[in-house]
Length: 430
Image (tube, rainbow, N blue to C red; front, top):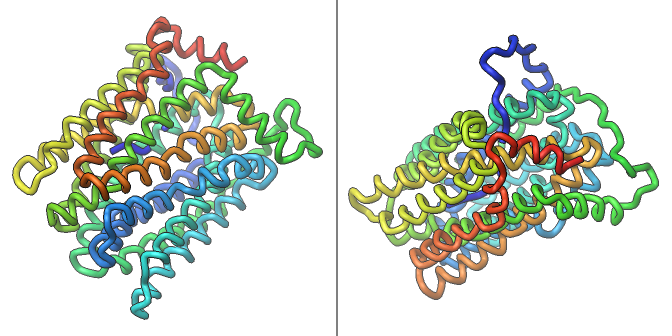
């Protein structure tokens, strides 16, 4: 389903750009390494709960809820705190903490003491680390790459993530076919250690203070500033609300997807991994097309069409999740949905980075994450309850159908002139 985030491409006649700064190179490499491990965990963690610990649909939904719960609980103060901290230290500490959490699973499994309660704790701990380190990563990017190259940098990051995630679930399926799921999680722990070493080499430029921000500004004032900036800005407000609706509805189905595939259909880890691989391949293709689509049709129309077409593809995939030839159709539609969704996801991040003053980016990013990612544990809980009472497939139908509503907050963007949408967005942020 969806999880969960346009830019103008460089003109063909433009002079050759300077090489990407080395600081971005280390950030890019660290993100690539950590994403490789995360792609394995994406498959291994729910399979461990469903296949080894016999989790029910509600229990599986609670596990997914824990993976995003920290964004709802500490998302807002995380942004205000990150804006006052050294971003590199926050990212390194987050990776080291995640390595410890992930390594605890194979250790307790070896001692035959693994429980669902521990998986919940690990999932929540991972989300807690992400609530801080992911905000720091998005806040540090504009200090490594100038504004004219933000689209290129974000596209590189998203394209690489999709490429790595395309191979990750497949690798996870192979690992799970050979070794136990806890051992596969150890792979992610090692990737986090490698990421921390790479992030230690990042040297961002100092962030200028945001207007109205001073050393005496309190945490509550900082949170309020982030909330006001997002919800008083018409474009950021529309994109944030659309993302929240999409994430909530998408997680309704995602919470029980593995229950359907591994539990009810009895598919092997390798076949389950194909769903995530298709999503990543689709995301890679969609990311590569984002800039061209935005230039051709305009930012506003591209984002509206992105959300609508992806929702239709995911809705069409639901009846095809069967243990026969129709499974291939479902996999293809999942990938097509992600290809369609990437222009919206990439555009939302880039617009936020362009429109927000650098000194406020942590608070603004955290505000968006609080709303957008905070909707996901609620959606996962709803999906678990629907799956428990009416079945996993009903939860998938419910989430996919409701996800089409995400286009509604974006409809005012469609009326914008296609060749002026980006300029209008910049003016709106002034």
